[in-house]
Length: 349
Image (tube, rainbow, N blue to C red; front, side):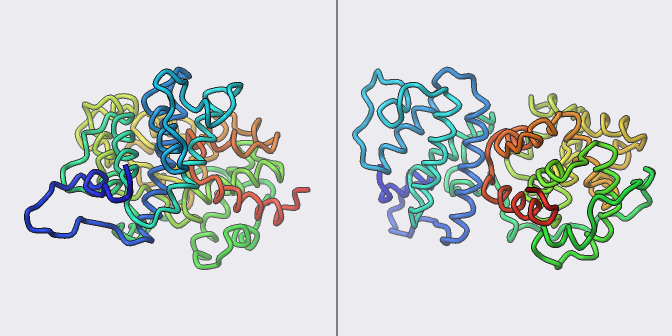
């Protein structure tokens, strides 16, 4: 397929009145593609190591965009593009990066965009894209299209202040690279220091990796709760879906009630209940507290410790840290940017 196959990419039906096919402006298309390829990679890396139709799609997409001949019908995905000695995770990592590099150069919607949308839906157990809907649009909400976020609640935290100051407000602002949210960062600084002490994120390298992750996930502390549509994926937070069961969402409205909050987006009734027990605060009854300056970072620290992420930070392994936080390598360049700044500010050698 080529760029001319835009009706396949947009799922729009032919019309006798030659009306133009729906499209996206270049800036939005670039952002949607970045989200879409990141989510496709995340889902791909979660699959068992046996070849999947998504691997065959990725092999075919790379061949198509680079002008390579189609793979023989009996060939293993990726063989003929890469060597034969890699693990499936290595193939999927490298293939997703190559797809991003190639597809981001395409100036208009491509048929492959529609296929990426379809695989995200297939691997996420989502319904097919509705006819006439552009790829990605029902899957993601762009920050510029999102409704304004409500101000985070500002209540008194019940945890003791840190005995030492690991980081100052000015250092955090240097790592963010902007002073636009100074008042919010001032309010968050005590919680950041308490988080570092409580959850043993207590070396410059551990703190640098923590900042690398949470600043990417929260857009530099701009977003303390999930951008809500709801999208097709967010509708699956509601029972009786399998995702809702995995999240412990049992009551109507639990999907929105326990949306992602905090700087690594604690999600689902079960996780809110576990965090409540750990902190001695009833976040199940008061879920908005997780998006408050007092607890938004604490939730991330609890997640960090319970997943033993310090072991990867101590090895300075950004990819391993990112996989635990995100499930893939989504936004790796942005995480690296924040990590590098944090290392410089915190004096990591």
